[in-house]
View 1 (cartoon, one colour):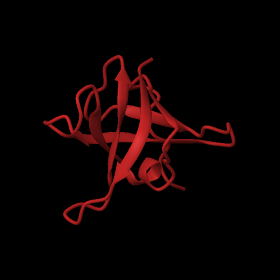
View 2: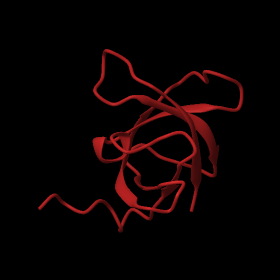
View 3: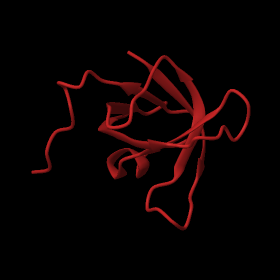
Length: 93
């Protein structure tokens, strides 16, 4: 299981979800199911990794864009974990 430690959020006008900047431990792939776990342990949210920035905003930092299920809840200090593809995202009800 890979981890992405969130350090900042950068909204941009050309897309609905912000760039989420932080440090990755392990590998992530576009379309990968992920789970956001809140720093205080209060909740977990599932979504997907939608894209990543080709450039690194700061050395050692990466910029990812996550689906709205994650982007609406993520804050600095949270950790996003990769999930096996077969776990996927639960469909809306």
